[in-house]
Image 1 (tube, one colour):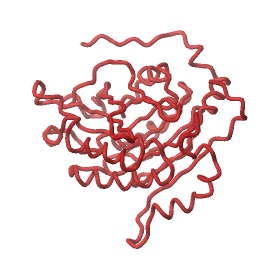
Image 2: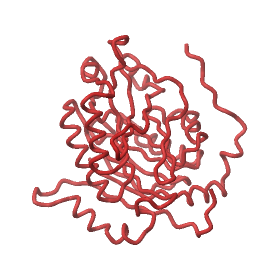
Image 3: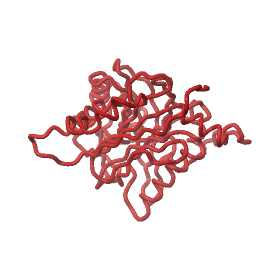
Image 4: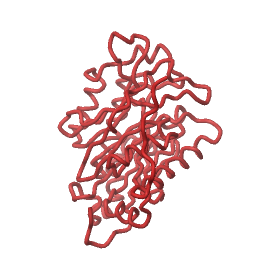
Length: 320
């Protein structure tokens, strides 16, 4: 796609939610603070061709699914007030613990279950594409395992995309495969909003550049990466380095939503195709948003045509 207009500077809108007195409305305050930027920059106006707004939600889900959905609703409301058309929540937004055990098996639901139905309702209520991680029961044939699944719900409450995590977190003293089934190797899960194509990966997938490359090779301009990046020595540095690397090597935006502390490392962020961090959060709950512009993708890919110059294809490794 070619653009005849001049390439704008990357647009950045960042909001961090902090505790406020009950009488205050943090959404109204954030909207008022950013009103002039949202009103004057076309990249922040919904529906502009090749331009859209994304937001990351960073919160601290735990074992109460109803409370998790209610907390997520408030963050989605804030993101929508900022003009976000795509809102990305973390992996395990439905139910989160530090170590997977029988509690996760008991909490799992089919994609027709109450929690996913609630996600679809939030997408419709706020008119956004909502991406969130759930624990999905695969049916009676696998009673001791579940899927770690990303669901994308559209503004009409329909499913837009579903991605089941392929690379399981059997590292750093954890063994996700004890409870989680790997997703099947399939065509990359992608969807399009305002002419911008989005692709999906989950948490530990970030450490496998070939998986992210498949998403870019499928045509995605933006890589969405919900995560529960478990804290530990050097983990935040690894997270931020890998996010920027995936953006640079694939010349795509990367939009990564992590858990807030204590069950996540935080540092949710939005990175542009050149590796510049447009918006990021600390380790507390919050929302960060930024504009996506395909002209920026085109400019970076003209300067650094690494996708078109690649000499190798990605093929699945046979199952063990």
